[in-house]
Image (cartoon, rainbow, N blue to C red; front, side):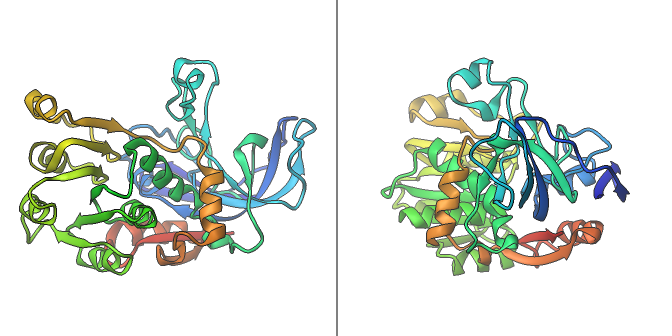
Length: 338
């Protein structure tokens, strides 16, 4: 079989590998489509602190089951499935309290171990979630990124009465926007790329803010009648934006959910958090959100087709990565087809 391997930062090659042998608790998936995430591109450029090399990347992927292990009882050959990339130990404190997505020994397919950019992959049966036949493969490949939206909704306790700010109108920001509008809350979204803000407006954003040309804090105060945002999703990883959100934009009793990540030190006066009883909430990956999101797709509660802008053959992965890295104004989500 063929696999897309990042040998080292900046170097991709198509390699031949043996089709994996499955264990009794595993299934063999013939990969049909896989999304490109910003983290995949970061691994390609050597900017992901969690990745090791060489690595077959890809954590957003779907496929057809071609072999079933003896201990897997709820799946059968021919099933269409989406794969949860989160692998946990089941024994540490986070796992014991039902938060395996931050397992002490967390592994993520495509980051810590080889992922979905290969023609076949063996995964635990518990990681495979059935898909209906009505969802095309290239759309189904977007299930995993939508689980991020489901996760942040839960972490931020989103309700219809919230006034929301989403920082970053990239693919994840736009996916969160769709989820927020599904609930019915008012939402503003900021970015510095006009095309992305145009897409956000078309997807129902109540306010779009170009942080290059507008004062983010002033715009949000006007949007919220000087109350501030009750719920903020920070997806840019820019520490200055996070500082501004906490210091100048979050309402009293507000929640700030941090998706973006940087190793830089954030400078926040304690009094900003204490005086308004702010909640600063981390979020990572998804915690068993695949069934919920597959239901969203099945009932057409979200619009994944609006996110997808490009498709490539998996053998054109390097070309796709280069497009994603150099054309943020034209690219939202890219899917590789197998």
